[in-house]
Length: 366
Image 1 (cartoon, helix red, strand yellow):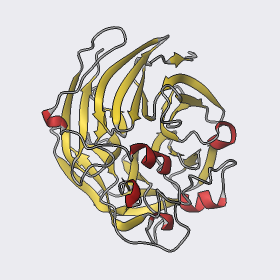
Image 2 (image 1 turned 90 degrees about the vertical axis):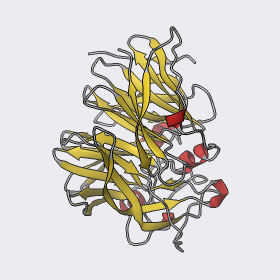
Image 3 (image 1 turned 180 degrees about the horizontal axis):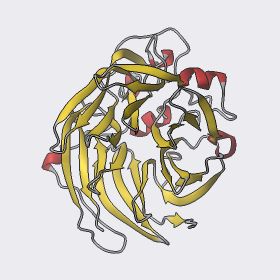
């Protein structure tokens, strides 16, 4: 696959449909991952760092050195009678207290930060895929979590999608109601055949003491202050249509966002550069179903792809070197760099049984 690089120096609905065709694979503890390049064979170590996760999603290292992992959780059977997500993805069912955040020690031991967050699942028609906590982020010593599986349209009553502040004892407080924001601030070009009233938030990053979150289904990026003020950075749908923006990172003062659709077409997904003022342009192209994007300290771009459950990580070195550093991942959903310089990847993030999610540790070839 060719990746066009434009370097300038100086849903869950759509997501659920993508992973609906995923088949359960062999446990990676007993299976080697392949590593390859379009120029030469890479020697990349891939190991299972932690097990026992429940649909792991976004992950970040905290100031205490632990790896914090957002988890979709276990879903639920509660139904609601409000405007629901259209079939076959809906109607959703959910529960207020089956979503989870875990933290993982340097030795891979998992402990629960909180197991009292909402979680919901799609219709059995597409496999009852689960969403709950989408991502986590720290501002100084405070943990924030992005909720994707809440809201009445997801079968959860009394709690909307939003951002919560989590304390050291595991208690939490909603600081920003993103469900209400999306309903009162509709995007220009919603896709009515693929629409979730409460949204399906996927990824979050921080910049200058504020949080920035991406919502794939409506197609937008918002800024959220720690006091809960919400403002739109960009309505992606207005200029790009229903491309399903998923993951976000920052580099050199700008944001970089990957997209999912058209998921079935090789090389149709992009990495977009978004300025803090909301100007958008294609930064790199030629990808498939992007669910993670990062830069390392050498300004190399790492892209996590997930094509119907089979994932890989592509590394782009300026000006135009492209190489696959790891392949054979199983429904990966997010990645982050650790303080040790290794990549940590959420694996078996969709469609696996309770407790079958993993975190992989990948040592990039430098």
